[in-house]
Length: 523
Ligand code: ADP
Image (cartoon, rainbow, N blue to C red; front, side, top):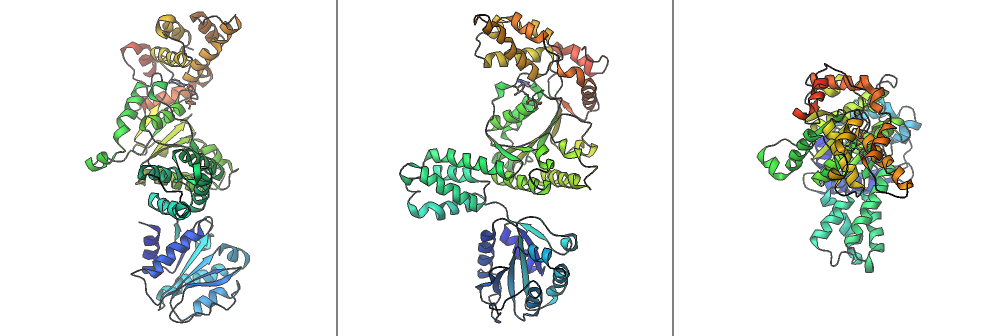
């Protein structure tokens, strides 16, 4: 349902006062003006705006004259609206400033919300506020509507309005135009207008071309980062960047087509998301980046630490903003990093974190847009059982310490990345894998990096197996101090609550034994 349809539905149902949360007042006014002048709206109803500085402005006169020249003060405004005998819609801008300054305003609004629906002709009030700020007294009386960010069709019209008349769209093919529009999705109309204008100025000969796409994306990246805890992540990775984790990789590869129209037509449910749990360095973040790369989708990273850290304003605002942006950028991957941080403060903050998180989890389950959530967590102890409930995520994966074979594969990935040829024949990978039992992926990467240091100092000679073994010997793996945490996570797999991200086959018997709990880590 569009914003205008939703609004009309409320007023038609004789809900007299609604609160619209938006930073884009001009867009709200344009929407409501179009609605009031369109079919299905009483022709004799007027449309007026009011704000404390400019007082009343008439956008469409009512049949029964409304005295819009009369000054209204916070004391008199609600009575003026109540006593006007005609039918009209009033848009009260930033009206929260009035109820914050003037005692009695909240009571007045509640009285109006109760009395107006029975009155004829119809009078409706729309209150715009830049943030969710309804006090408890009004929460039950006023529904809250949100104006979503412009979708592709609106963005296209905005592009035309902003730069069409300066000739910037001449020679722009439909394909390029669609890409320009897509690049700007996630911005408000004001932000997009600014970005389009900037792109024109930087484009060759004042025309938009392919290079402008990067510029728009860069601008968008900066705007999104500034506005909250969300980041349009610039780097995605390819599948060959992961060593091991075959089971998780297979699962991700199978979902590649699940976002397609064909999958919808066939009746497949939209993938909702996946949760990855494992100690730090096991490759959870890497998998989110690979998923976005594999599926060729943009990657948004939501930093839960920042959402609940309080430095960026209210956590509620941050999370709503993130959900909105993800919905317009969709299809996309939304990587929620360290989701357990959302639960950390739930005891001491009068329920804000659990409410905010509840909003997020409900959205995740009910959303109709292809936003794939990738939640990563380091510890299961800090996740409440309802989070792990079956059906919440499409799948819950546990990333265990890599098996011997996986350690070889991870070492191979990183040695290859260093440009070293013929890794398999040149290094004794099984020996290094044996020497690195209990190491996670990040530590294996560090072994390769550190192992290059000595041969470089040693006259820049070629790196050998010995160098890597020495580097491994100098390192104390993190798993040593995380034994209990790993055990708790393994229990999840044993209880059937999570799936192992690795394929544990015959070659990994030792590990299978450990997973069965017969033997703990040999650390
Ligand atoms: P986590 O998110 O679980 O803390 P990361 O994904 O940030 O771990 O891992 C840090 C780095 O370690 C990665 O960027 C990658 O280079 C390396 N790494 C971890 N796991 C693997 C793996 N399975 N294969 C290849 N590299 C890995």
